[in-house]
Length: 420
Image (cartoon, helix red, strand yellow):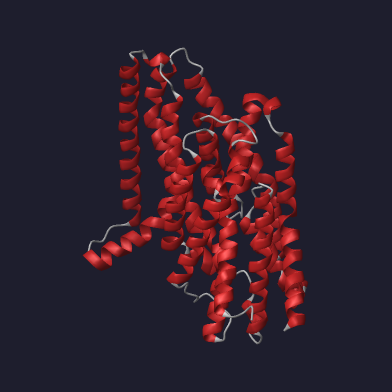
């Protein structure tokens, strides 16, 4: 009964729901905490961009998780065992993410999926089915990611304080730094988001219109246009603030400008997160559907149907809307009080860390990077104001994600085998 298509779809919605409730805090938590956007605005913006990223560009990660993590040869003669295993993954990850979200703890859905796959594979085939090197790399990333992100965030915030915030006329210096901040913002996030977007756009222009445009040219044009537009808009906002209050630049509210920058960065993160992490939710569903349609285990030729991407997108925005505020509050408010300037530094540090790790091929967690960045800023601002109890709870949840999801998956898998 559990392997019937309607039930499997509901299980896919269940894990996507919990992923949306937990992981989307990565994109909007600091923006809400710094008051750059309200919670309602964050939920609307993240919902639209997460869904768009998931449906338009979520197939690549889904293919990798569904067809490449498991050695297909081990299940080639027993594909139904793999179906049962993927059902176990859906249930185990959904349960763990729901528990973590209920506690308001941001955890890594990627680590939960890997742990769950390892758990049922061990029961089904044995310890040889687990890629222990990948587990070691994930553990290494778990330790290294928040440290690097925290140091980067602290460095960025220190520079902004030195060059802008602590100056006698901060808005005057901000005016000079706006072009460089715009270039840095679009450069870092463009390197993450645009490689996902531009190859398909380039292919569309060639097939539908007959225009051959290199994807890198599209990225460069989009980045330059975005940076230039944000610079001009921010300069005009400075002039508006000064004219309305009839004050000099030294007396105007500087955080209003940083709030615009942080909102742009949050939009980038939301889109990139939807295109990447939806795979954690729908990869097991895609594998089950493929096996039921073909009778074979998935491989490199796996195509993700659009309707499955839509299921993942709907689940993510539904979970975000109903439960997302709990984890958003933890990251944005319950570790350290943030302003738009410090929140922007946290998001830039997170993106830089994830991008650097990706170039090295290291599996890292956006949740780990973002929490590390917030803590790094807290240490730079006032270490006494850090909520240590919250940090300890988050760290404990990180540490047990893989073993707990593995144990849950192994237990559920064993129970399903007994009932079958």
